[in-house]
Image 1 (tube, rainbow, N blue to C red):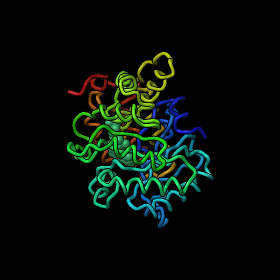
Image 2: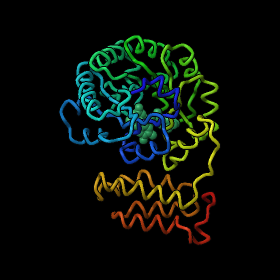
Image 3: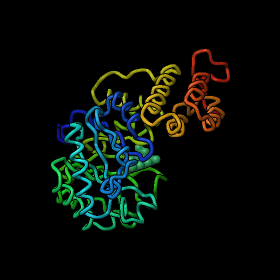
Image 4: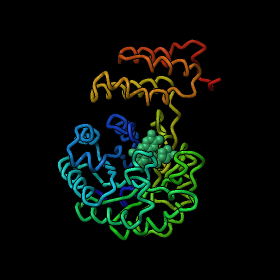
Length: 337
Ligand SMILES: Cc1cc2nc3c(=O)[nH]c(=O)nc-3n(C[C@H](O)[C@H](O)[C@H](O)COP(=O)(O)O)c2cc1C
């Protein structure tokens, strides 16, 4: 397996970890769109150590195309190292894991209250001990995903990143917001660029990449080795395709038409049914399908109906009626009004 630096040099487009969204079916779509590195959802160290079935379900990477980044969340070096060994064992069997990432960015109250995610940014020594414990426990490359800091007054990303690199991290991803901001406001890439200039390991910038032009400008201006895309790729895996083509110097392709969007949404739904069963799949797809039809005239009503359908056939029918060729005037592409 290539090192993180080699992977990013070959292809700088990284897809973000997103709990509840970047599961196996979604990862397969963005991988097929050419993503250079694809993150799992975060998994909890304790849940892995206790053999939680749902958590092992999240780690459904057997047979998945490489390279995959597995993200681990926790607050205590010892269980983090134990969980890392479990992941390393799985990685050994699957042969597709490029790195083990440690979550130091999640702002969710239930995570932060356990001392995990972005709370670790307020405890740099502990954060470094966790990275040291994990990097010593496994031979997989270890990386850390963090934010700018806890709040505006405590933007310690440069210090924390340097410490975790000293402790063994081989790549740093920075989301240009503080914990206090959650997902509000604009991501600020100033400190991301500074980190990229200062750190001896590759830095991946993250935050508000929604178009190829923005991705290209951020790469150019920040000097980052890669860019990570989160919300922008929901319902729009073609953004990944377009970014990959841009960075590879290939000509751009036309945006997807309704038939292509329909085919992608149906592929996503069917794969979800295959892996999660119809009951769960239909409900899980409620988080994704609105993004596929976002911005199309009449989509609000369709979204409402999709939320009440509980069979895959019903969902397919609704999507097909809305997106297939013989649409009525009300279904023609137009901004939502
Ligand atoms: C629904 C949702 C779930 C997320 N789950 C995770 C996660 O499990 N681990 C993580 O490090 N970041 C998580 N994030 C943060 C994203 O990885 C990313 O840093 C953030 O969305 C900013 O990038 P964007 O502007 O491209 O969306 C999540 C974000 C969202 C919106």
